[in-house]
Picture 1 (cartoon, rainbow, N blue to C red):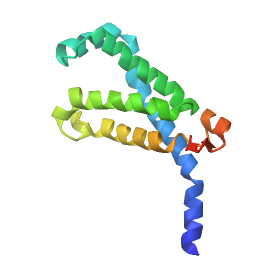
Picture 2: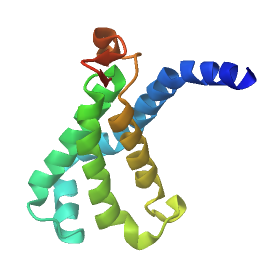
Picture 3: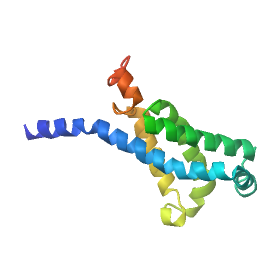
Length: 148
């Protein structure tokens, strides 16, 4: 009986936890996105000269655009599953090009924070954004059997 009550209370918190994940991720992507858009030339130079990425200006615009779209969609709770996948790709690139050589610790600019972002994005990709967002308003928990 206690187990069932506890599960009922925790189940009610699922949509709240998904909302918090979305908003924290949107906030986390906002700063790096703004830095890129503020000086795209410097970012492209860094991408090309320091990181050795091909087509550095194109990659800088793609990363900044993906992050900008992510901030908007995650905040609104719109297309959460859709945007989670390209944001995960951005995190994989960030980990493999910038952070992995610094180890795990965030204090050493390691891959800890982008890994956490990737895991949160994976949760959103697999569970959707919850009912507290535009997707949830339209779908009332599911659309054709797929959770939002």
